[in-house]
Length: 290
Image (cartoon, rainbow, N blue to C red; front, side, top):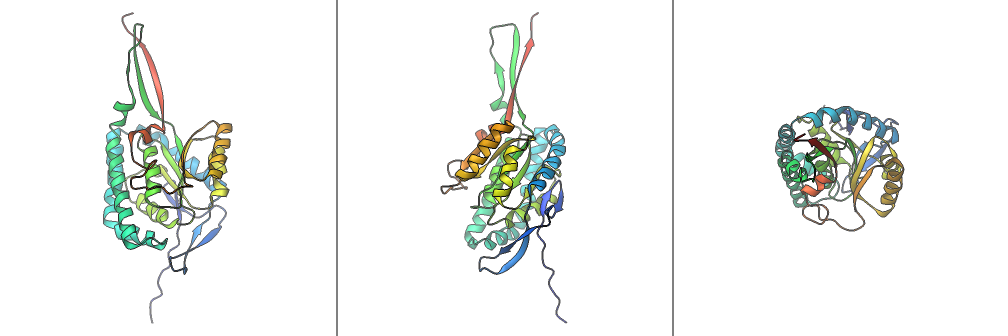
């Protein structure tokens, strides 16, 4: 008797665990040929709130680790992804990418993780500093993580864009809630499975799938989300700006209404300034000679 294959049930990754949507809703995901592949969780505002709780619990421990240790952990994620490139390539091909495009995106994603792993113990020296003041004080500024950061990924480059947007936030010690590509969420599902087997503490990166129109307003208004980044269209940008004004949060997004070269294009290049978008500066005045 032929063996029946075990079909995969995609789940989101929140708080170090694999979850279905709180509402139990799903939406059908088809492959590039239009054939049904799987049911993907259709997350809700309640799932966003649950993810915020998980992220908030993880923030203190992640921010409290040494910068060098955070770099080791991010590098370990790249190590975990390296031998599983074929799985990520298949996930991207499911969304219509060619084999060559998928391989290039996976390679760029792993390289991007290594890049930010190298920044964890360097950004502080460049963003902070000692300030000359005309008084008997030792004045210095340090960069500190903000807390919980929301990320909204675009449909294009569903793996590379997602990781490129997440990394600048987690590098300095923030935790992240990320909304995956709406049209191609499966690479984020596979990424969650790799995060679960890496050394990254549960709750530092939380991945949700679903519809932006339902979830972006909660990203914008939730008081415990301290900043929102991503690549969004003009409608979602307006929603984020209006909600952020009410809940007093930072918004650092780029336009998804025009094509973005996530491998090297404007707004997507990994840099110190991307990290700066998700830190707060604390200046200390210490009396001397008194």
